Length: 261
Image (cartoon, rainbow, N blue to C red):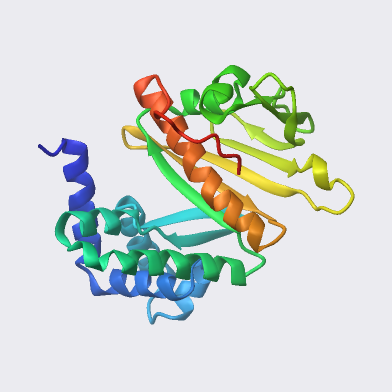
């Protein structure tokens, strides 16, 4: 039987898709993901206020997510609710379309170097305070990540990503750019094996209360190349699925891979 929360999400999705203007906005993000409000308004013959209202409905349905980048707010198409509808009502032979949509999203993000390289959003039945603790507590990160994230998490402090296999190896290190518990954490990442040649990548965790649950957005930008994008695209979903499971059930996923973005 559907939960009330599940029903609420479905109702919001159907309401959002019922309006042709909102469907057009989704089409625009499908073609060119990661647009600002000004960019979206330029393609529509309507006021900023009207577009903002339509985007708010899409955000409430989780069809659009937003990420702050400097002074701008970028809008991204989130295909997850559409995927859930597809799994429930569409035959399996239609699934390649979702994979194609995901590929279009990634190519659009990569083509615009001034925009985030990778964005992953997950919803967790928890509180912002507990999610923050799970991201910054060395013992907890060791449970779901296979690495201890060690730092005092003050802006300007160093941090390191240390294996829990007893070797003491640090696979990533960096510094804390911004820390606003329990809302936002920004870190820079360095690879110890590429100290002479690399520029650091940057990871931002945005933690938001979303009705009775928490929306966690991970933005990983300034990636070195295509291979780095492929690596973190495999790593982050695994790590965050483990984090979600630990907070919601008290244990990590069985046989979950220790993938490092």
